[in-house]
View 1 (cartoon, rainbow, N blue to C red):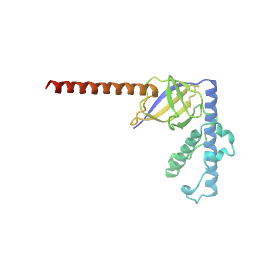
View 2 (cartoon, rainbow, N blue to C red):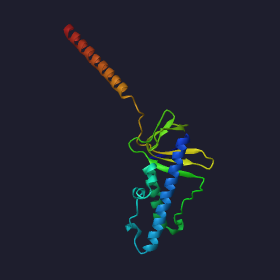
View 3 (tube, helix red, strand yellow):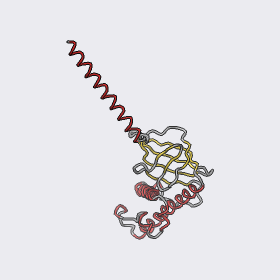
View 4 (cartoon, helix red, strand yellow):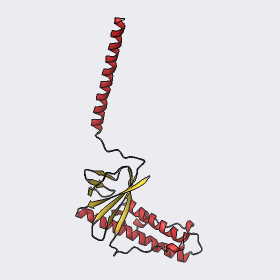
Length: 210
């Protein structure tokens, strides 16, 4: 079962700059892909859209190298969002054709994914892909589950938020000190061996009495 948690973020200036850059890059890749699809559709109206192969974010990076400065998963999710909007339109025209994203929009966001622990919360801070430093987070309630993805957004007031999608069927265990775990395990083993030794002594004493 999937569940979403929303928290307030308090990024520093460098983190704000990175977010602004990522917001801009995801908007650019979405609009660029949409423009290319419109052009392709006009030139090949009779062609089944399912058979048309469109460029990927990785291919656009060859022409626009500055796209490499942000999270590749954020760009991939922008493509996924466009794919859904494009597909939905051709299945139901009443939905409306996908619109270009405006640079003047007061609401900006991007989505990224957790790959082998690239997103995690620790000591009041959260780590997200590509960004080297951890962001201060106001975690007003405990997060239970395995993190799947997160969406970072900036609202018109200028505040930043993060929505974290988790799989509640797969609980994410907290990080532990491996040395401490091994120490406790060895101590427990020692106690078990002592109990076995005591039990053996008691059995031998009982046999002698008999």
